[in-house]
Amino acid sequence: MRDVAVIGVGCTTFGEKWHSSFRDLFVEAGALALEDAQLSGEKIDAMYVGNMSAGRFIEQEHIGALIADYAGMATRHIPSTRVEAACASGGLAFRQAVIAVASGMEDIVVAAGVEKMTDVEPGATTDALAGAADREWEGFVGATFPGLYAMIARDYMHKYSMTREQLAQVAVKNHYNGARNPIAQYQQEITIETVLKSTMVADPLRLFDCSPITDGAAAVILAPFERAREFTDTPIRVLATAQASDSIALHDRRDISTLDATVAAGKRAFKMAKLTHKEINMVEVHDCFSIAEICAIEDLGFCKKGTAGKFTADGETAIGGKIPVNTSGGLKACGHPVGATGIKQVCEIVQQLRGEAGKRQIDGAKTGMTHNVGGTGATVAVHILGRI
Amino acid sequence: MTVARFWRKIPQRYNLIGTMCQTCKRHFFPPRTFCPDCRREGRIVDHKFIGKGTVVTFTIIQTAPDQFASHGPYVLAIIKLDEGPQMTSQVVCDPSEAKIGMRVKSIFRRIATDGESGIIHYGTKFAPE
Ligand SMILES: [Zn+2]
Image (spheres, rainbow over the protein chains, first blue to last red):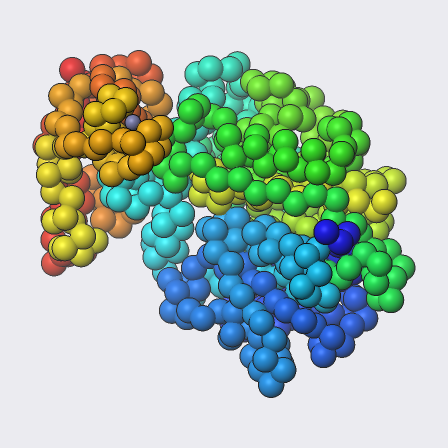
């Protein structure tokens, strides 16, 4: 297998983008990534696009071809493939692109993610997202996504001594980081009171425990590492790619508040990169809900099971802490255009490793990890990137 | 959910008919037609569950999907059936009564309404034992 490098990244701003269509979003992200890599579109050999539910959100399927067409590739007939794994679609698209380059099959490959979520009524958006869980045996009986994660939160708080304030600190920290990220959907800081006084959605989770509905797109360009310096002075090496699956329904898990797919993908990634936890300088985790970030940092092994609440309250996951988590603002503050999230995580790590993260920069960062979850943990993708 | 899709699962939804692997005696609800342990050696047969179990975890849904909106806040739980498997269901009780470890039994209730003129879905809920 060949070593793979990220040579360009591009991300739209995230938010409720009334003026931008699905096509506008991915064209914008793709153009930014090409410009970043100083690459002309004719060099691209293949594309992988993460998208969860364009069929439900904009009544459009056949996304691979649509994107290649509007990116100006129709007459070049390059292979373009849509990848779907609910909220992990972006992470899996990135992994497919890495594998394509590593195998030697393709040289210059785009991995992108896009979701346009605000063209349907909020109720329809929620219903489409519920399709990431088990429709027959969870959705049918009234399970919502916040409801499923609320059941994880209650199980967790029953077993371990995390306080409601410690859980709220996840959102407070992510809003602090989001306020330092120019693409973030929410760029204002909040307090623990903001979270605790927000509307109850699914007890014990409140509105400010939940990631928002977001439009956005992100794209990265991959090349064989040996060719990377043709395009950039700061190639970022892909040190590991890992993916794992688990039961589609939460009720079938071994332990309700452990995502075994995160544990499995994390272990595989560390093994592939030949790195220890201490050698990872930052991680972008999938905080679709505050409790998800708590579980993620434990299941990836950055702290012991049951201690992430205190770890967070002590500032160890903040910028300047032991392991900064979600410097982008995470899904909570940066926003969560589901199919684009996994690619945005890669963009954030690449910007950090290049020293281009502005007010949220981690000094001297050499390595970073991404963690992207589909559903309540039925799919997990973990990647490690390094300026090594 | 369309009529055919709902109708196909009526025995399971109305009467808690799941499956069991005769090879290893593992019970499945929701039903499976393939035993993950015995794989091709598994012999799967229908199995009627007694309908008693324990609440493993729960939430109170305050912001409900449209088809459940008329219910007001409702208790959603993961229930460990006495035969072993876990399932997701609503528990019909005062939300303040719900707690982890609570014993519950199955009851037959209306689950959801598909729009104003849509079909009404029935199925299994649970109530404190
Ligand atoms: Zn068996």
